[in-house]
Image 1 (cartoon, rainbow, N blue to C red):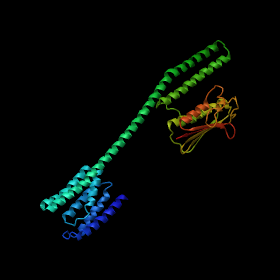
Image 2 (cartoon, rainbow, N blue to C red):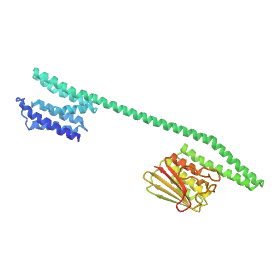
Image 3 (cartoon, rainbow, N blue to C red):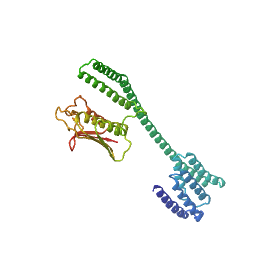
Length: 385
């Protein structure tokens, strides 16, 4: 739109001023069809300014030189070539711009040499100053634009460097924590599991009390489960492409091995989720099913995964005993409305729902847990994705 307005405005100014100039320049060549054609070419060439300013400069310079050579009345017909000259240099085409400027000064200078006169020399000097007045501000504009681009580039580079440094430091911290878990905690838990197994066998051979055998079996199984969970944590802290952390794709297998009938339904258009969200969804379902088996006395459970526009929602329902009273057996269900634990933490003193809430909040989501609409217990988590 701006280019169209420029072309129309220049056409009006150039044609009107050239026609009116004959009143003061009776000796000039009358404006004939070739003259009109040259004026139109000089004006219409401005339409190339946004994409090809050097082409606009070439056409306007040629038209202006022809108008000068044929002796048409002096008017505002040099304006288009000065505009094209400014645009060419300002957009960084310095070679083409200064070549055009030299051509514009050379044409009248050659004519002044061929026809020596004071008026001609003065006219050449004035014209050269006009060309310089158009070219020099264009250089300033070009330099300012180049400086602005360089400042923006450096700012973007600095921001990218800061982000890369932050990511590098975060990765180093994750690797440090992974090493600590692997070198210290994993070793300690492995020793506990090994000695618990040996002790259980020794008690069994000695005919010891069943309570001791059961307690040692619990210690052995819990230690092995802790090692398995720790390997998953290490996989998050130190990702291994051969063993990616669990996510939505592993939910069907989790439902099949849950220890009770579990139905899994998915709604919405499935899409890739961020790794943190994938892992959070899996852990919420895993912990909710674990609580259902251990504490709710449920016969079945249902998992619903819904892909929404701004995130993903996962819901786990069971037909168990529902929320416990104070000191009830299902203390793992003591979290309500996603705010924190309310009541006990279950027989083993675990922090299942509180841990779920922390994991979901860390991923930017929210979690709620409480009585289901048809009895039983419901856990719902929403995570942005």
